[in-house]
Structure formats: structure tokens, C-alpha cells
Image (cartoon, rainbow, N blue to C red; front, side):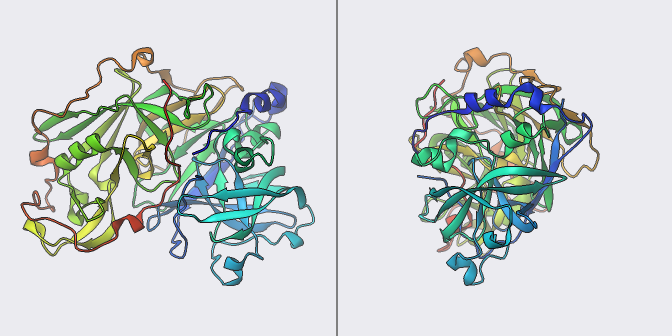
Length: 487
């Protein structure tokens, strides 16, 4: 991941608080849903107003959370992937070869059919992901509708040449826009900022509720939070700079503890990386954590690996009663519990030995990376967390999510500089390195009952393995590698 210049503060200042005034009871919701995008390739990272609410579609097979939008005049309906790990909204051109081959099932954009389409910077949009898929084209301005609101002038990219069959809605910092990284365009107001600029929200912030793995939809709420979607305290933690820079440009928080809990006991797991830099990224299917920590997690949950080192478990472990408790910001900070039901993903092979021989093996939702790589908490974590991303105050707020609730109690941010409503700061953030556990547990008390349930068998026993399966092909990624963390 390249170092990028940061121009966010100037953009925020140019909006002006007065421009953010709108009806206090208005809500704009972006619907995100998990849809079947079987023909797609994994998306990998590049080497007083009221809230705006949109529903999200949950694509369980690919881990993609999709949002329906409308672009142009007259409007053309497209379905784009929501990604907190990138910052551009971009669409696939209907003239792209991949669409002419019939692969753009989620829609494409015909610029010749929009009478409000204006080229902003020709050949300036270019993004490439870690799997070498890419998109190149222009930056343009056009009308953009999301949820119940219509933006009159949103800057977007158009993929004139691309091998990716759908575009993205990037909601990260403007300093991470593709054109800024490539030096082809100055930072511009992306979707969260443009909502403020056109008066729909008071501040550059949004909250996300993905719901559980089996749910078909969740939502993202721009400019506010929904207190009916979480339980317990909503705790604010700092976002930290990456790339050894002084400015925040990604959603990186400090993971300071992980505890394994089951009926047989609890274990505080250790890592030499604590406090660990983790990026909260909705564009990544699974979570990637330090190797030493993942080894302990695998010991607790009886995870096996294939020849590539990718973790898997018997699919029956989705019914297991054990869970992992993730802590952020030091003692008294945010805590989110993640159950096995959210960590056991799709069928990826067959177990070839041990007491589960012949059973289906499912990809495990936590995988290991070296200490030189980026640590990511992806969808396998985010489904259990209600998360608020505050780009003005450089904070994230986390709470335990409530699954499958239909109630709603939306509270708007009061102003551009207001902190997250109904939240409190983590009290020990200035000393997050104190009290962290770096050593391996002396014993694994939770392991004895971690995978126990009425419908799941016990530990794997000797000889467990996964038969010749490329488990990693089930995993989509949304944030780059080789980031650094500055505390």
C-alpha cells in the first residue's frame, strides 16, 4: 500500500457548518445486501441535518455487501459493492469488454445515455488490486441517487477497461482515492463528504449494521446511529495513522485483547503484536490477524489447515457454543463477542482424517498473516459489531450488535464536529500498551468445551486434514498489505 498525501482537513473546512443544515428528522438509508456474484473475482486492495440510511444486501457466497444506486439522467440502476477500505465510487462502463461478454449481472453504466454526464479528468481513474484485477478510465461528475436522496454532483470513476464485473461504493478517507494515490487528481468530496456538502447530513460519519451471516440484508446510516441495533455501551476508540504518517487515512484501531470463552473456562490469548493495528474493512470476507494469535485461536477452536495453511473446521462447528471476545482501546474499552456461528463460512472441501473424517470442511473466518502484513477485521468480525466511523474526529465507536431486529431509533450527529451520539470514550487509550498479554496461555481451559453443542462433535482427533482444496478461493479481500501502525 502506497503512502498517500492527505487533503481531508481542507475539504472538511471548505464544506462549512452552515452548508450542512437540513430537516432534522430526515433519514437516508443505503441498503446493502449479500448477493450471489459467482461470476465476479475477489475484490482486492490497491497495491442540523439528519442521517442518510441505505439498506445493504448480504452476499453470503462471496462476502460482498452490495448497494443499489442510480446514476445519471435519466437514472440507470446499478448494484455496487460497499467498501470501507477504499474511497472512490466507481461504475463499470457498459462498453467494457467484460460487460459485452455478458458478465455484468449487477448492471453497467452507459455514459452516452446520461445527459448530465460530465468528464472531470480524462484517463485519470486507475486502480489495481492485489490479484492484478484492475479498472481504468475517467473521473466524471453526474447525478447519483442513494436511498431516499439524490446528489446532483457526485464525482465518480468509470471503468472503461476493467476485468471486474461490478463497481464499488468507497466510503473511506479522500486521501485514499485512487487518483490521489496515482497523482492524477486532487482529493475531491467523495460520497460521505458530498452528502454533507449538499446538506443531507451534518457530518462526515456513518454507522454500519451488517446483521448476521444468515441475514440477507443490513444497512449503512450516513450522519447518524441507530441505538436499536446494538446492546451495551457504545465505546469510542481512536483511529491511528498508518504508513508512518502523522495523519489518519484508514480505519485502523488498536486491538488490545482477545479472550476465548466456553463453558469449560476462559483464556486470555497473547500476541507479540499487541496492541495490534487492525483495519475495520467491510470489503474483506474474513479477518487476518497475527500468526501467533491465530495459532492460539486455532488451538481453542480445533481449526485444521490445508496445504496452503488456510484454516478450516467441520461445518458442524457452526453450532458450537464457544466465542471469542475482542477488546479495543485498552482496559475498559470497546468489547465485541464473535460466536462460532459467524466464523464458520462456506463448504470448501472434505476432512480426510480423524474423528470427523468424511465430513464437510468449511472455511474458518480468521486467517493468519505475518507481522509485516496488514491486520484486518473483515466481515466475519463486523457482522457481530455495530460500528460508527467518524472521519471528522478520527474515531470509531463499537458496540455488540443486535441480530435480526426490526426496531429503529435513529439519532443524528448534532454538528460537523460533534462526537458519536450516545457514546463514551475508552478510558485507557493513552496507555493502551499497558496490561496487554503477549505470552501464550499456560493452558487452554476454554478448548475442552469450545466446539461443544447439541449438534457438533468434539475435537478433530489425530490425523485431521483437508483434502486438496484451495480454501483461499472463497476469500475476498478489501485492504492492501504492508501497512504500518503509528501509536
